[in-house]
Image (tube, rainbow, N blue to C red; front, side, top):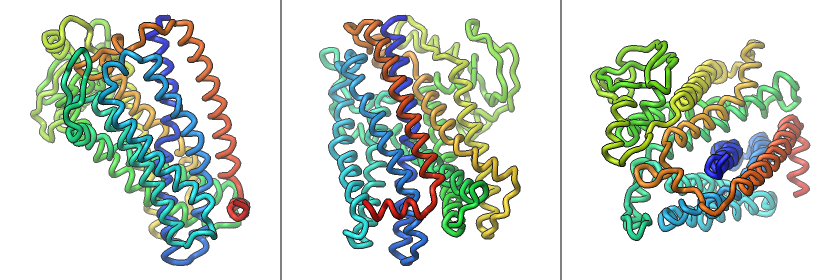
Length: 454
């Protein structure tokens, strides 16, 4: 295989590993901060126990997430050095701010939170975890500022074969940032909520914990938190879809396997297509629904892959501008399918917990427990949709992926690192799952005693 293919595999593998930890960090940091705030306001020791229990799991996830994230930035200067040369003036700014401001903020206050129990006042200690939550989500914001430029370049000028920033304010106010951030943050909230729900269900119904009240409260908070998250996810996803129709219509067409431009375009329930010939073999569609989602109107025109290919050839020159259709199509459905299932699970659970009922049917207990996996499926498939659906562009309209790869790194060198990182991250994943399982199944007293020792 070529260095390009291997470099893409490496970046994809590393990023998927890393993105397993990011959403949970975003959502669980806020959740733990809310619990400690409840403890400060009420003085109820049950909230302190909840804070320490979920905080312990947050710390494990955070540590592994940092370890997996560090490698990503090194790849830009190694496998993707041509990308860094072209984009460094722009891409480096939000990454530097993320590292120097957001990451240092969260890591500094996380240390104070870990070792500050019984050393800081209650209010000051709660303040530290809120700063961790703010820092974590600010970190995500700056990463998304960088990624949004790749999706929708703004505030730049091309000079001496490089993209140079001329308007920092335009970079921060990029319209793509403000449809992407709510979707990512709410995805983190949802991931944390289902994590809390699944473990609470395990403690209550499988382990049959003695700390029943603690985990009933956790389950109730988790369900309400998840309801908020799923609603924002749905609204944010809808806004992002409407924005994509304007700036990256090729991605939308690929996600729907829409070969021809259509007025009143139908939403595909199932399409089996011939990708090489750009045509349907078999398709079931809901008439006009795609136009409704894209424009809030049944009459909107949605451009097809064939028409867009012609437009892009005229605008950017000869080449294949159609992303992998089958992959993009099924990633979209995986994301939406997992999100829809989460929404219905949350509605049923919400009906119970708002009435303080915890007499779930056995099938519902199993469903809630295994639903821990759903946000991971939705978040990972959503990221793959966003990045693969942009192909062949590294920076949309400015730089193709094949021009971004380093021209000095050999296939053998990349292959060695692909194997090395894959095995290393697999080991870290095993360690994470082991530690998560160990402490998620632990008694409240075990976590509390360890907190006192710290």
